[in-house]
Amino acid sequence: MTDIGTLGGSTSWAWSVSGNGSITVGESKITGDTETHAFKYVGTTMTDLGTLGGTWSTARGISSDGTVIVGNSKLSTGDTRAFKYVGTTMTDLGTLGGTASGAYAASSDGSVIVGYGETAASAIHAFKYSGGTMTDLGVLAGGNSSQAYGVSGDGSVIVGQSGVTGGYTHAFKYTGTTMTDLGSLGGSLCYANAVSYDGTVIVGYGGLAGDTVTHAFKYVGTTMTDIGTLGGNLSNANAVSSDGSVIVGHSTLANGDTHAFKYSGTTMTDLGALTGSNYAEAWGVSSDGSIIVGFSRVLGQNHAFVYRNSMVDVNNTYDAIGDNGRQLSSIVNLKTALIVSDLDSDCSSFGAHNMCVSVGGSRYTGTEDNTAAQTAAKFVAAYRIADAFRAGVVLDWGFNATNPSNFHDSKNPLYGAFVAYGVEDGAYIRLSAMANKTNATITRTVLNDTEAGQGNTDIRSYGLQAEAGYGIEIGKYNVKPYLALRRTNVTRLGYVESAGASMPVAYNDVASDQSTYALGARAGGMLAENFGVDVGAGFEHDLDTRNSGYTGTIDTLGSFDLSAPAMNKTRPFGSLGMFYKLSASQRLSAGLDVRKQTYENALGKLFSVTYAFAF
Image (cartoon, rainbow, N blue to C red):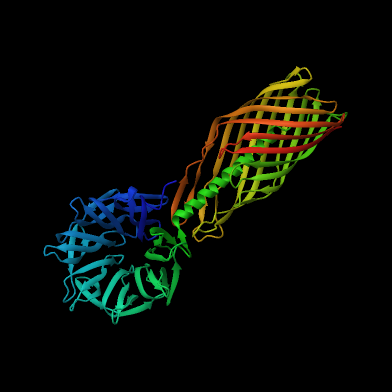
C-alpha cells in the first residue's frame, strides 16, 4: 500500500484541488525530513514533482482541468523561482528582472499563471504569465510591492494584494491593464486570495478598524462584506467555488482553536479538525463546492484531509479499507475450509434398501485476529447403486456464523454431490463437488475521521475434487494412502457502498482461486468391541493460484490497489476421530480436523459430531 500521507517524511500540506476534485497538490517532507518537495496526489499515489535543483518546492495551484500545476521551487543557487509542471516536466518561469519569483494560481486551462516576481530594482510585483511572457502588473498608487494569488477561469480577472499610500496593504482586482483598489474592512491590511470562475466573487481577509483582528470577506460588485468568524477574532477565506457560492478557509473559535470552515449563503459552517487536533485550514475547493481539501495539525504534524459533508482523514480511510481486506482473508479461509471438508464427505455403510444417511453438526474456528467462525448442521445421504458403486448428496447449513465484525451474511447452505467406486481393502476413486452463494452486508471499518460505508454483495464459492487411493488391511486396521486433485474458488463480487458514506467506495471483484494436490493417508480400526478410531495426516500443495488483490475506487480520491495477501501454498493437515457402533446399522462419531489455512498463517479447526445409520 502506497503511503499517501507524505513523500516519506513527517508532514505534508494540501494547497489546491482540480475542478473535479480528483487531483490534489501541495508540498511534503521527504524521507528523513531533509527536504520539502511539491507533490501531486491522484488516487492512491502521491507523486514527488521534484525541484528546480534546490531542496524545496511547493505546488500552490492547479488548473481546473488538472493539466497544469504551478508553484515555487528553490534553485541550486538558493534563489526561488515560479514554475509550471506539465506532464513530467517542471519549467522555470523566470522573474521580472530580479532573482526571485513564485506562482500561486492558474486559469482553467493553465494558459494564464499568476504570482509574484522580483524586479531589477529588487521590488516584489504581481505578475501574469501567458504565452511564455511574464508581465509586471505593477502596484496600487503609493505602493511599492504587490503579489497575485488568484485568477478567474478565463484568465481575465486577477486578484491579490498591493501596498498603498501610508504603508498599508489593500486587496486588488486586475482586469485588462488596470489594477483596482478593493479597499479594506476598515483596517490597514487586506488580501484577496481567490476569485470565482467568472471573476464576479472575490474572497480573502482583511483587518478591521484598529487592526486588532482580521476577518474573511467576499467582494461582489463594489461591496466588500465581512463574513465573520466561528466565534474567535480571526478568519481567512482562501478559496471559492466556480460560481462563488461556496467559500472555504479557516477561523479561530472562541476558545482559541482554529478550524476549517465552509461559508455558503450567509452561514459559516465549522468543519472541525481531525481527531486529536485543534487546528485545521481549508485551502482548496472543487468547482461545484462539494470537495474541500486542506490540512489539520495532529501532535505537531500536518495531515492532509478531504472534506465532503464530513472531514475525512485520507490516511485512515485507506487503513480502514485495508482492515476490511484482512477480514475478507478470514472469510476466504472459512469458506475454503468448509468446502474442503465437505468435498471429503461420504457415507459408505448400507442396509437392506441400499441407503446410508448421516446427520450431525460442526464448529469451525480459525486462529486469525477477528476470525470467522461457523456452527453448522450437516446432512449426507448416499445410495448404493452396485456393490462397489455409490452416489450421494451433501447439505451443510451454517446456522450460527461469527464473522469478522464488519461482515454479515445470509445463512445459505453449501450443497453438493459425490460418486465413489471401489472397495474397502483395494483401489477406489471418488469424485465430489460443492458450491455455495451467500449475500453479505459489509461495513467499512471505522477509524478516526473515516466513514462507515456499507454495501451489499454476494460471496460465491465452489470446489471440485478427484481422489484416488488404495485400502490396505494391516491386522485389524485399514490404511488408505491417497492422492487428491482439487480446485477451489472463493469470490467476493464487486459492489459500491450504498449507505453511510459521502465518499462511497466502489470495490472490484476479489477472487481466490487454487488448483491443489493433496497427499495423505487415513487409517482406522476397532480398539474395542464397539469402539474405534480414525486418524489421518498429509499435506496439500497449490499447483496454481490466482489472487486478484484488493482494488477499487474511492469517490473523489481515485483508485486504490492493495497488494494481495501472501498465500501459504504448502499446508499440512491432520485429523483424529473416534466412533462408537450403536448397532450393526448405527454409528456415532466425533472428530477434529486441523489444517493450515491459505491466508494469515492461520490454523483452521473443524470439530464435528455425526450420527449415521443404514437401512
